[in-house]
Length: 168
Image (cartoon, rainbow, N blue to C red; front, side, top):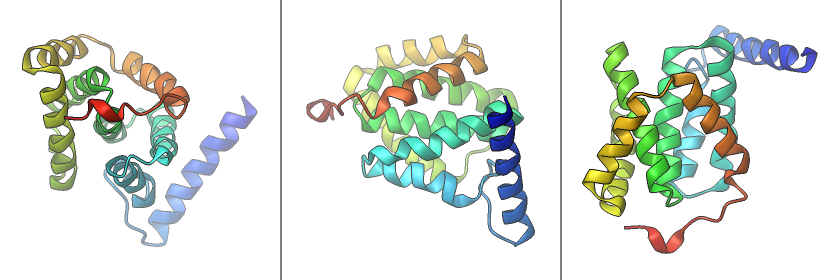
């Protein structure tokens, strides 16, 4: 559509402008202000974490950039865990791990620390066996099916209450 084409052009222009003016970018190709807010807001359980992730989804769908896809799965796994959605977190972690294995990508240490924290909580909440089952099932799922599923979940994520009593 014309609107999505305009958004895509605007996004590309914004990223090019940031690169041109020396602004630092995350491995996704997005300026850090698009990636870090999702991670920071997830740690704070802030509902605004959804907005930066939605921008990463748009980038993934627009460019199919492997780094953006990796970032999406990792940050979304953390967001799901921070909301007490342990099984969703396990599936997203499984997708992230498959992506790491297939691309030989190395996680940034800050991303690894962020993800390890939430993966540990998810494993504790649902048990090691269930976590591994869900993560393994995600290995068999097409990446773009997982991206679509994540987009659908994010569209309703702020409407779903955080499961406060379920945190380990």
